Length: 77
Image 1 (cartoon, rainbow, N blue to C red):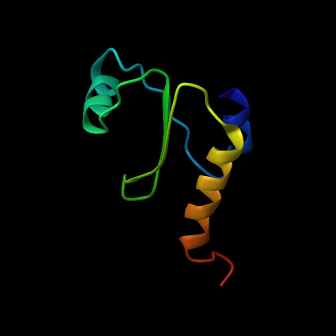
Image 2 (cartoon, rainbow, N blue to C red; image 1 turned 45 degrees about the horizontal axis):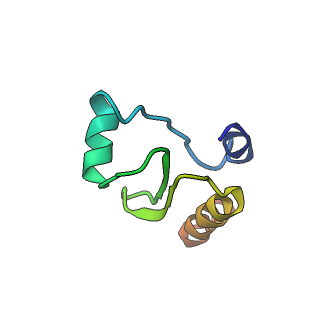
């Protein structure tokens, strides 16, 4: 996860939540998380675009973020 956080440093917000308490517990229930660890990539509206349970596959995460970025308006225009 640390490497993914570094890769996405200026592109996406990475938030770690403990699923056993508070906000993490509510998020786990909302997204129906049953296996830990689970990684979600959410679009700007909070809809999951990628869910990974167990082993985290860095390239898939980066591709999911890239797919979301490709739908955003270009800031240079």
